[in-house]
Amino acid sequence: MVSRVIPVEAFDLVIFGGTGDLARRKILPGLYRRFYDGQMPEDARIIGAARSEMDEAGFRQFVKEALKEFVSKRYDEEKVATFLEHLTYVSVDAMGTDGWKDLAKVMRKDVVRAFYFSVGPSLFGEIAERLHKYKIADDDSRIVVEKPFGNNLETARALNRTLAEHFHETQIYRIDHYLGKETVQNLMAVRFANMLFEPLWNAQYVDHIQITVAETVGVGGRGGYYDKSGAMRDMVQNHLMQLLCLTAMEPPSKFEPDAVRDEKLKVIRALQPVEPGDIVRGQYKSQKESYIDDVENPRSITESYIALKVEIANWRWNGTPFYLRTGKRMKERVSEIVVRFKEPPHSIFEEDTGQTANELTIRLQPNEGMDLTVTIKEPGPGGMRLIDVPLDMTFAEALGEEAADVPDAYERLIMDVIRGNQTLFMRGDEVEAAWAWTDPLIEAWESREERPHAYEPGSIGPEEALILMHRDGRRWRELRS
Ligand code: NAP
Image 1: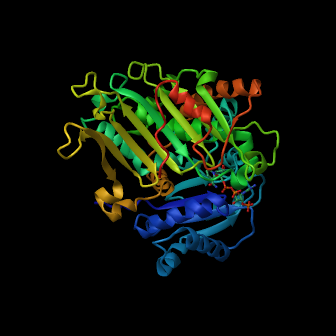
Image 2: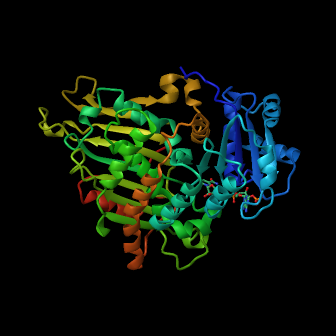
Image 3: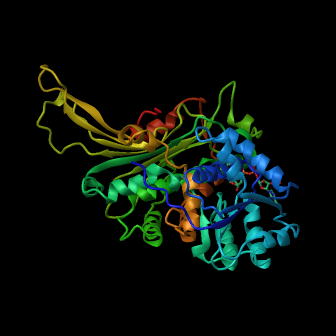
């Protein structure tokens, strides 16, 4: 049932930050899995690049260790050994002159050249400039830029301008790994390849939409970075915004990069400013564990949780709010989109029969899949009692074991880079529009020096976020994995 694996063209992929955490946990294991499945051609090469002095053998050993740790089922000694033959390493300083000529020598001319910027954002511009200066990149090369893409509109614009000095927009792949998730793409398939949902996908039939990205982990070792960012910048401006766009956008005329991205941009531009009363910010806090200790800043007023009520001012969504929430140290690790339909305009059944509204849940993690609650008659002779039953479409159950083993978001997106397909990457104007909406909200609470509400680690978030829904006569879907 899983679609055929078609090898991509030959490529040289340079991973700047090839010795870093992201490369070790996601990029390199992802590339191995693509190799294992036969998608990486014979003459593909992966070139690790970082300042550390390391030879090819050292890098291969480093990657082997990473694969042992992060590739579970498909770890196979023989395959790993062949995969490692595709790898080499060049020591390069992104801020200086060391190593660039060596890198230029290693690169081949007749293959796709891609450069993954898996380094801190302050190096993005430096690398772009040097790729150009040392003539390592040409007009066909692609660059992959990790998040965060700026910290506000001004810095995002500056970064867009710097990249644009050396690369065309068609060469820039701004990665948001949420877009590489199977279910996110399935959201587009469900909406635009079926007659069933799209006619109902509007304010007339949809009561509200909830988008949740809840994490059980705290800020971990990223405290320093996170405290300058917070949930709004780290999660809402990019991941939740992308989910909102795909849920709310009009059907593009074609499943093509600019057609899809034009529609997403229209959604962002139609977002209304959010009133302070429609935003709840939180910070996890208990005797044993608290955000301020994790970030080592006792005075921090950065949010580790945020919930917002968002309105989209267009014909389709006028009057249907989108409730977004995301947080760290929550009860469950869940990412999902819930479309809550309206109740039928008139019930022919008695009031207490148990009739409720339909709900379509698109689950990104865990157990990627969808379910739709449908109201039916409770079986048995007890008269007309109604119950909700889920029509469950967990991929693993519906399509078999093999289908559950779909490529991880990163590996899918890297293959899209090699194929030259930008559909699942953010365009520069999209990122800027997202910051233009986010910035005033952040500035407003920063200027008020507003303190976030405390919430218990391992909970569902601050009480005030429940009230945000309750006062509208609605409630969050229970957090369950
Ligand atoms: P990291 O573990 O700190 O790794 C940074 C990498 O950059 C290392 O390989 C480092 O190697 C290299 N580096 C640093 N300075 C350099 C220089 N001047 N020239 C060349 N290489 C240099 O960071 P990371 O967690 O992998 O994150 C990389 C990027 O991905 C960041 O933009 C981050 O925001 C983003 N990101 C990471 C994650 C994640 O889960 N880790 C998730 C989403 C986004 P040397 O010290 O040897 O030079």
